[in-house]
Image (cartoon, rainbow over all chains, first blue to last red):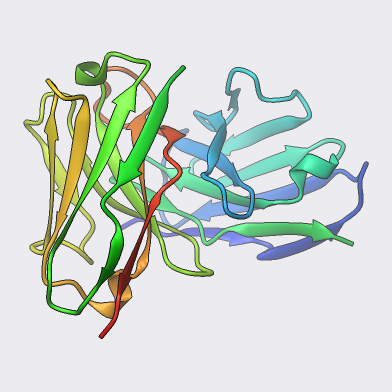
Length: 106
Length: 122
């Protein structure tokens, strides 16, 4: 099974900060990688798929990059709505999620 | 708009069974694979099962294989998760989710339902 490891597990930041989250796969997943955001008590919502394609309606401050085993999610200017937990998800071989990165107020 | 609404969760004793349902609307249900994903209290997301758009293929996480069964009724726009021999570690919120692309063999999950809670406790 493919394991997905996110770093950091928790990130403290302020509104306006540039934020980067990393996701590493235990083996290559090509570009079969999605990013989801989950606010407390809510369902996750898709941000990015195919490693770098922005889902329709998602603000352009979100961007994704990477391929193979290393991927990043970047938020160019953190907004109040972005304090949440972020998950990467691979779908190259079965489906696996990273353990999550919580973005909290600094 | 696309909507997924789960139901059927509750408090059950270890060793018993429970069936979850997910009612879909706002899209052509029979064109999409459907997933179940769970989230234990305070934990991350764990993929549970998927069923192909036509019901012909089903896959499960090792943690539930042999105990859970996914099925669908395309005439009712509903996907089910039959859970048997439940354990304490099955306690979680269970979300259904749609495959991101129609008739896709494998892809991202989008959108997600709000989830239904399952508590396994004596």
